[in-house]
Image (cartoon, rainbow, N blue to C red; front, top):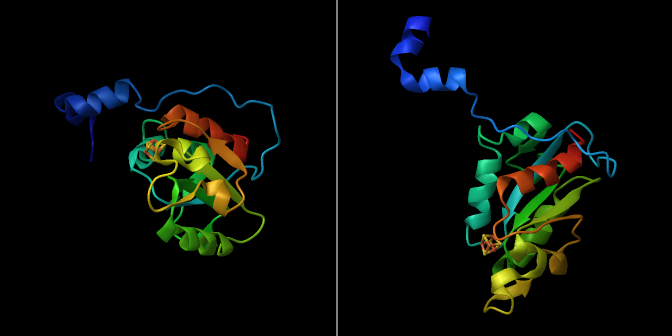
Length: 164
Ligand code: SF4
């Protein structure tokens, strides 16, 4: 059991108690209506990323940025998802898996292209073994630019899905 004396003896616990680690964000905007009001489950697909976008997505769902507080979750199966969060250019080997993964997502569904490579090819445009952008392979609904996009940018786009 964590008591007050335990907290005093452990500087990290004391720091967490005094200063919450989660970053504050602005109130939700009033722009477009949310596609999945309240909550959205997403299956992440790495279609050919350098892994930089994955690092930022991991940060967006970490305790610091806590995307979960806005009703967004990453799930393991596309059959449990409302849509796909796709990173990277689509490599030749990932074009068919990306299509079949999307087919496993029940309708209505959404596709988010996350990062410059997913949106327009980025630094891998024209590279060997690349089929194209995410939009060249599956229909894209939301684009998140950046190389890589930082957690606040990812969070803002995801909040647009849930309206929270
Ligand atoms: S957008 Fe940048 S960080 Fe993301 S996969 Fe492409 S090169 Fe890597």
